Length: 341
Length: 258
Image (cartoon, rainbow over all chains, first blue to last red):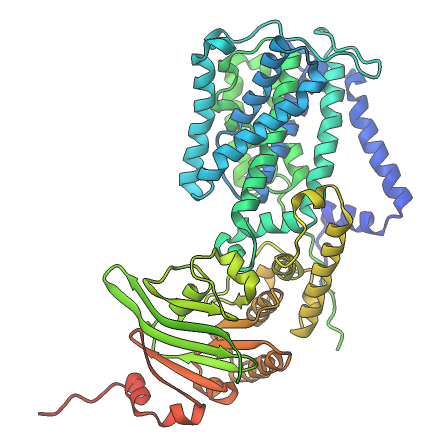
């Protein structure tokens, strides 16, 4: 046997594989419960200046994590560089804002529409765009992100540049009131949806769709020669990424109660992409860690006012030099077996 | 009469002004190892890229088991029964050996993304089939002990064999091998020859591009020779070895001294 280097991931991985279903269940429950309990944490070390930790937990942390998991399907799993992810976020936010004003549907009934319209946008963008590759495709997605924002600015029916105000929050559910003052229910809601999305993405990752996406990322031509319907799976990646972005957007709009096109700029696309790359492209846990850190650090550095961006940039440069594949790279756990013969 | 599993009729391929293939006819019979040889640049790999749908020919036709595949996307042609390997190894490097083979095995499964997401029984059965196919193919090529290692970390020879296993996972009617012995030492070439014979004996027809003449002559049932995009000869190994045009193509023709 090869001598193994000390590696936390392998230690945990080995333990997880040898664990009984009960041990796994307990671990899962404890981890999930810890995350649900985070808003009760009252610790000056983790508190952020100017904003309360509770509201930082909702935005940016968990919302970034949700979007990063969605974008990771596109960028990390399938290797398609998407620079316009904010478009799906905007479509979700506008769907909730417009539909709650024009129809009698409440937030929960609008959610499927927000996801549905974002998926439709993914399909409409993807059908022509996904025939291209690499830089050309990246430029198209970049343009798409801008187009959606500019359409919003120039369409008076959806508020134009002034945006939409007085967006209602979610109606109470299971005894939780969603008020403007208390960010905790929004955090719990987003966390719950995040867990569902993680479950779905992991499920797909371990089966045929996950292998198809990875094959496309590794070598698209060869994937096609090996019978993978590459266009179909790239479209699915776009549609799933879009659905998650739309979901995040609807929650965001219901929390901040008024939206303007200027909330949905290229900066946000880049930020979410940075979470994915910083955390470890293609590794769902790395991506979440990246989103949490990149959401948290600028808030923590708020006492530096605008200088914090410099420190933020410096951190990115240093990190990418130390760990170019991200904090938790997507490397698979390899198992070595002796040849029996 | 033997069945032609792959048939290429009057194929003409041009890249800009260059004629890469000119009126080429080829076929692969059921249960045989057919070889395609010729000097570098003769158009051998172009034949593979045409039949697998990567390039479009100017004219001519390609039939797989009697059905024209012209104009079909490569993944559909692959599913109809053409599995190929590559002159330069092109594995999915960041995936394990098992996943590499399973990806190709997946192509024959009908269930798609939604049934995988909702865990329908069909998807579970398909997953099981893919994994079993992949596992048994790795055993077949003797790589089952490396199933969970990343393809890019495998030794060179194992990578070449893994490509063959991946192509076989498509359960192809014809297996297309593009210089599988490139970079092998004599011992490895002998083993590869045995493997190819074993693949034929399992019932797969093989179309082999190869520069190593001793390997080609030993295992091929029929050899076609390409030179400058033209088929200049076809026959059994012993016929090809005696063919003057083939000898000229490989060794060059002496200029007239006059």
